[in-house]
Image (cartoon, rainbow, N blue to C red; front, side, top):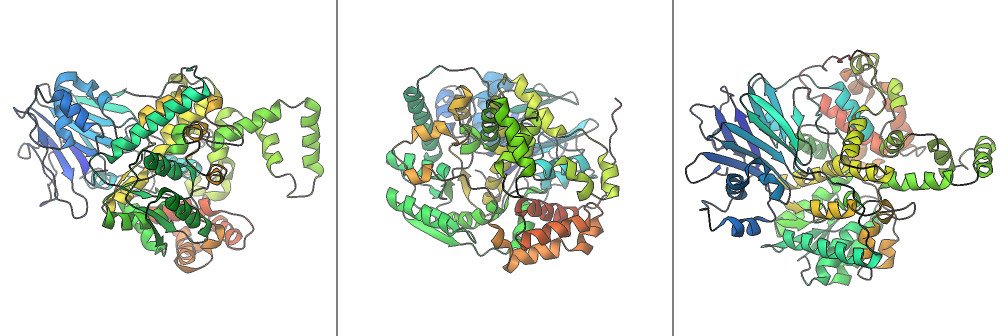
Length: 613
């Protein structure tokens, strides 16, 4: 992915273009400015234009089908450069704003048409590259870099308590929300048109859920063909490396590329603390494919790593696993410059944690009533710790789908808000309904034709979980690595959405479509491995700079200074985790990110917005 960001400004007269940092157009009048924001060590790139300079565009990311599009357009247009934005301009001249439907790959773009006074903004189909925007009166600013956007005069404002609550519940802030009330983000597959001082939004792509009646063998062949094409597109013109874990998705990328006789030149694995089995499994996979394997010692300076994440994203983002993977990305950047990763397989092919849990609940509900009643009695009389998964099934039997999904993925549960937040923070939050941000995504899923609960869960994984996981690409870009995700492909996503939900996963297995496609290519031991979450083992927190990060950032005085979280609750979670009483790794990581981000905020939280009725 390109290390450049994209910035678009309309009617913003008080912007000073930095020396060498921006490449602008119409800078004298400042009526429209389009610019590339250069990444570390990268020169600013020129804004692409058409022949008469009436249409200008910038694009962050990569158009994977640029060769196909250039061949289609070449006979009718003169290309001024090899920039992907050049392709976008000529495609726009032929197809108008719907040109973005033809683009494939991770991108965010801005295009100015001087002929009609129109600014077009668009985000890729799966939301792999963000695009933030803000409107202030009759002026608009947009950027794929939130820190760059927030640096504009007049945009730094109070943060949004409801969005912070969404982050602490869901682990991500669903679009169009951001952590700043005055800044929105485009949804995956959404475009915005700014004309006459007004913006209108339009969804140009969403997964749909028609049932395709295909036999298992035909379906496996289709998925394999589509997956191979997605890998080839991301290998075109480069000899990439591979970020390799011992899990299913990275193993599948390696196996398919090797079977296609286009293996990665080298595989990189970060040896995470306490995760030695992962490194050994990756080494076996690389040896099986005949690919050189590099193990990178995961000696992480955790406080510095957190600060880098916040500087790159401007908000809390990224998991603990992302920090470890970043070490492998830095080594790959020095060797190859471009690397593949298995990120996105779970969300695209289906069978995520919520869908598998829903399948277990359905199986429980199908049991005779006497069996279910006996289970409830057993829960009341069994010794503590004996009921395990059964307790979750009995409780979930009464949950609506929205709350079932939320409780499966939640970092903190809504009923924990009273103990987590201070009185001042609770007053700012007001009293929102449980899972309010998640409810909006559920409504989108229904609008896209998702009727089955598993289809709804699959949709939410695609538009909420996948963009959050793809943030890894931005942190990799900061060290100069173009990180590409073959399975995060919108055509593959549509194939998966077009099959019966049961073909995507069940209570025991996930990604059934991918498993069928790689049958015989990946060892059975890999197919049978449980999915590993993004957090490190609990024991990894006990020593070194990670423990120092935990005890320093979440010290009672430091937490109390922000007046957002209750120090006594945070201290209890920290103590229980370090003592081995409970694994609070995800919660503590979210609190560390949130606390260090709050310390950077110059303004207090925005007041709650009360809605009558």
